Length: 465
Image 1 (cartoon, rainbow, N blue to C red):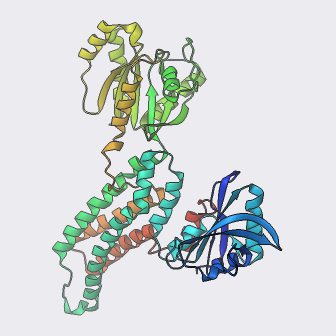
Image 2 (cartoon, rainbow, N blue to C red):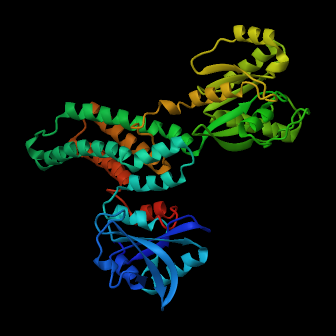
Image 3 (cartoon, rainbow, N blue to C red):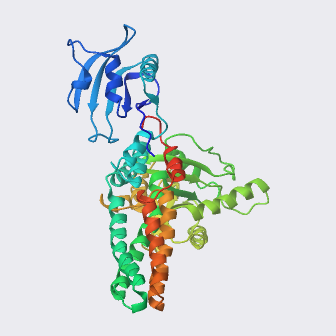
């Protein structure tokens, strides 16, 4: 059941700033604020004012002025939470913020729990559960791509897809359930061929949504890029250039990098998670061997692989090393980086270019990490290989691990329905699998929920949201 108490919290970032916003939500939000608000206009009371209006005045505690503030009023049901909401804009002093919170609590409010404002919005039907979860993603978005996906989900893009699937399945479930009521008369109300077509469409769409999680998770947390190659080819120097800081130790000594160095950088609105791996070579040194094993592990996890070749080496040696890495990668995007172009010379570049045959997932670029030559071309290739710009604003991409797990279960259930139709199983078994699929889809939007699920979701929100 929804708690009917009036809650309050600071909604702006903690610390000192020019202003801070303190938010109240609940039936008594306006009344509580009215008790401590004093307007320059005589006899002006907040409870008598219209919704969606701003009011200047003072917050007073026992005739002591706490601060001069601007109060915004939003009345139920036309507010974020669906309840009466008051937003108090005060000066950003931490002392003032705490004094105002104490004043509101003394007059009948209570401190909000993490995510409680958004949870109330969900409970009051202002948004479904997937939209509520997207609120946290919008707040946490650190790049243009993740912001775009979270905003699309918050506006209901993902919800519309799920709701459409459920509505179509519900129709057939009702027909099959009706058949069960007339089982002795051996009648069919649900058109099996139409149901088969629908299950195939749903199976395809659920599979597409499920498979989009790999890209969505990469966009949200940074597209994984593994920088690999032999020792001393310039991997660490390249990482430092891309990060614009001395993150990795650079040395002439072979095997300097013995573990995976990881960092995230925002490049032109897209987050990339770079892994500088240990140089791959034969070694008897135990620690370096462990680092090389981790290099191969990150190679498998990466969406994009940067293979760094040393142009000072013979072409035959570079081609041999390229072949070894290509045998290790599994359908990932590959950028072959010819480093030390200032040393290798144009003839070496021409020879290597003519010898390497590229497929549609491979590209070749020549740079000098030390001289910072042609780095922009490499960055452009990274952007292209991420495929972020190919995602249209209306595309639905799954970024939430909870949604991914539910979609997997729903996909398995609809596969059983499709298989059952092929095998001609009875309506009661079909209905059971369809109901299971409907149940999972309902868990995404919150049409089917438990207190445990809601508690787990909203405890990760910030207080005040």
